[in-house]
Image (tube, rainbow, N blue to C red; front, top):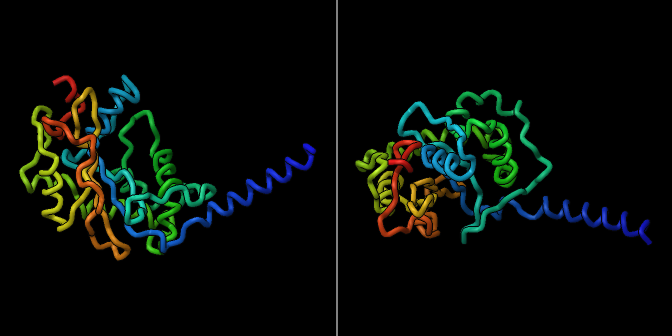
Length: 243
C-alpha cells in the first residue's frame, strides 16, 4: 500500500504545483502598487526589534525614500503573490542596473545582502507582475523600481508641503496623504510602524492602473498603525527612540 501512496502523493503535489502556477492571468491584475519606504523608520524597527545592535545603510540624499516593491493587486485589495515559485532571480539579469538599483531599492540592513531582498521581492511579487507584459522580465521589473523612485519622489512631495523629518514633532497622517495627493492627484496609502506605542511614518503606496496612470488606492488611505491620538513621527535619525 505504501508503494502506491507515495507516487500518488507526488503526482498530487505535482499537479497542485502546476495549478498554482496557472492560478492567475494578467486579467487578474487590476492595480500596480508602488510601495516606497522611509529608510530611517526601517532602520529604527530593525535596530530596536528585529536585530538589536544591528547597523544600517541610509541613502546619501537625506530626503530619499526607497522602493520596498512593486506589487500587483486586485481592485478590492488582495495582492497576487508567488505566481511561480520556481522562477528565481538570476543576478546576471539585473547586473546592468545594479548600481542604480542599490540606490533606489537599497537594503537598509547592513547584515543583509541586496540580492537576498531583491530575490524575495521578485519571487513574491515580481513573478505575478510578470503576467503583465510591461513587467514580464526581471530587468523590466527592477528597472521600473528605479524609474518610479525618481518620478514619484516622496521626500520631495513632502518637502513641497513643508513636511520635514523631525524626531520630536507629531504629524497628522492625513497631511502626509494630502501632500502626496497634491502631486499625484490621487489618494495614496500611508503606512506606519508602531514602536513602544509610538507611530512612525514608514511607507507610502502609490497605485496605478495597467496603463501606469496613477489612481486612487481604493483602500483605507491611513493604515491602522498610523492611527494614534498624538499623530505620527516622520523620524529624522536612527536615534529617534532616544530623543
